[in-house]
Every structure is written in C-alpha cells, then in structure tokens.
Length: 85
Image (cartoon, rainbow, N blue to C red):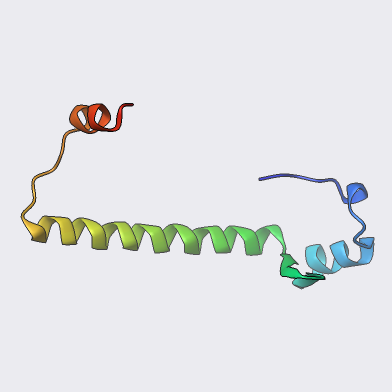
C-alpha cells in the first residue's frame, strides 16, 4: 500500500479529521474515473477481515470441489517443473 502524508494531498484537513474522529467515509470523485474513498483505519481493517474471510471461504469451496472430483493432486516439484519455475 502506498502511503502519503496529508500535506502531499489537496484534501482539506477538515476532511481528514471527519474521517479520523467521526468515522465518516468520504467519497472522492474525479472526472472520467471511478470514485475513491477516504476511510478510517478501523474501516480499512474491517474490510481486510471481510476480504480474508471471503477468500478463506472460496478456498474451502475449491478444496471441497477438488476432493469431490477424485482427481489426484500434483506435487510441488512436478508443478514447478511444468511451469518452468
């Protein structure tokens, strides 16, 4: 993740304070591109936990599907050789 100091942005200090102290989420629009959001560190941590949970569930589904398929697993050395790694 890239980190910028507040002084490197043109976002008013009031906006940073609203996010940091009032837990407000700020939507930042730019012409012709998708908006970005300024969120608190707590909100970011929550989003990261949700993302981790999502991918863990997807991994469990994929593993269950693989086990149910009856296919044999490929060992790591064989896979590396096949991929040329």
